[in-house]
Length: 273
Length: 214
Image (cartoon, rainbow over the protein chains, first blue to last red):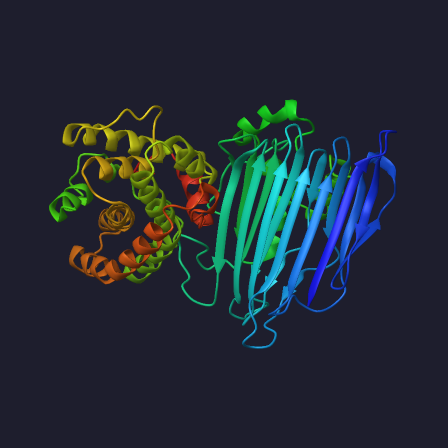
């Protein structure tokens, strides 16, 4: 199955955001959700078919113009399934160009046993752009071995590469250098930074990147553990607040809201509208 | 290419401060994820195919592409989200260049180089090629952590060296792949990440008492 979805958000000239393009085809169906308050627009990706399955070739293109605020979520986890043997790996290409504010907060990707999948992400952020980019991965459904997934992520800011990260998981070769026995991993890249951080534990850390941005990453036995750590984190409001990212250790773990649901509501009220 | 020169570059006794670093092992031992020789084998294999591949590719590229060292260092920065690991890599690069200056005439490098860049610079100065730079990098990635394992876990040094010998073919394979890709644009060079190494390095850096610098 081949499909392309395209979402273009622009400033409407009255302090709000309008969707200049909202187009997709099964299984990638973007739908506008939520109200018009707060100056931002929310789009949910609705899965119009099972998968991705081997042989699928999917592409999501997102553009957020200066002054526009877009949040993209998905209604359900992306369950990557094996599909027919002999076909090439399923592939999802994500391309984002951001001059305004983009919060990319999809549900996790679940690598079902036997799957073979590649996600290739490239985000280009113009100077002054604000991005919150979330990638969650679950290695296998309950009590099954992980399928094969390669995630390749490139995030560029003002023409320079800020973050370049590939991750491969599969049924074999568990390593205490990579994921150990953990089955869930979450990463949140925030440009220019996060409103607050937390002190590192042996399962999670907030890391100021060499360029203007922060990576928060967490591992867990399951995705709930990861969400409890990452969901409460919010983007710094403006580029001027980037220096907040230099002092993530000031906030202790105890200051984090324990209830992920409450945190999610909190997140809704932040930069992501 | 001089085989003896390669041995000089890859020698664990090279006074470049490598013994002060556990390659992320100390943090994983403390977290209870590495306790015996099998765990260590898994740790080293994972490290080799992630940060080992990246280090080998950047060492090979630095050896092949003099003039692009600053861009390669930026590429390593983009692949090293952990500030503790960036700091450790720069410190090891600085120590390596210092040792290298006593060994061969080194060109001026500019700002502090990351460890893989410095290794590539030394390999080039010693008359070695990208393939040799890559194998020295991959070898250093596993032997550094393996010798730390002997100190951290009290493992039998013979058994640990047996493991290093078994990993030698993996080292060669990783180095070959790294050298093959040494001409690619910086963004396309290997970027295999290891989340537990990043998290562990950040956590480790907050400890008051530790045996190794990283």
